[in-house]
Image 1 (spheres, helix red, strand yellow):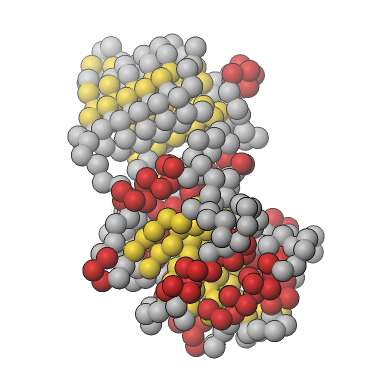
Image 2 (cartoon, rainbow, N blue to C red; image 1 turned 90 degrees about the vertical axis):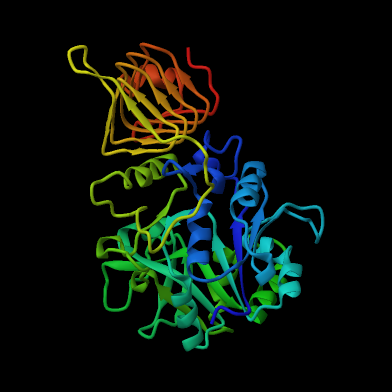
Length: 410
């Protein structure tokens, strides 16, 4: 069923709402869950589903993303498998991608070269697990020209999403972007269907739609804003309910987990979802592994057990990556990327520490995101005094302190 199927992954967004994490990297390359990059979840879904022809369309600040994919996502070329990054080629002029539909239009040569029957167009910056072949089977069974992955959300939250209006048979009869009065689901007035930004097209439909849209002056050249609004009037468009999707080894509590980590608060909360005893998103499912770069770093180490001096290296309700050293300090409900060192008598709680961060002795770090290569000096407090934090660092609406990559903290 997956033969003659191509996946085009949209990874070119600037991710400005995740600043400062995106000052030097593309949003899909932002670290997540200690060891991963955000894009690893989308790519793992395709590979675990048996789809091995992946084109990743990049644009802004793409160097770290390109490096990660080229060094990590190596396919078997002998079998015709590949995961390739495609920079903005400007084949149609001198413009960057104007929107998601324009990104496909500017790369129609990729479709022509591969000549697939169906094309997945997925975003690269969401956290979820999905067997995409179930969406493909749904598409084929209904002889659809376009299938939109949707997720039921409370109707009062519908103004935050593109909302799909469907009939009782699941066929799309309308699409509205962030409406004030979202159309409810059939037989459930309390919920509406939010687009996940993941689409499956029959190739001829996709090529026709992005080509026609490219001719329209003033168009946003975006699938949600420009194409899906009236596509149902000339094509068979269906909504695929993500809640019906299952992956091997997934618990019932995890069904339907999908997060758009487009803001710092959303990013922080999605990371914190990982550290519960029974998380609603489980990284430890060996039947649906999330792949990422391998490492030759040594195992994490916990040292000192001097209870009299209150110098005990411990971490609870936390994810601790390889190469970390917890030296006579306490870590709770936190995520530590590789090569983090937390020195004696320091306290870290509710924090995301990215690669090569060092926390000095007697320091206290609470509810913070600390990007790579930051050294926190001894006797420093972060996340304790909100007013003092705002004078030195970005702080989110919910009070999360964010320290940019490589910042020298005084």
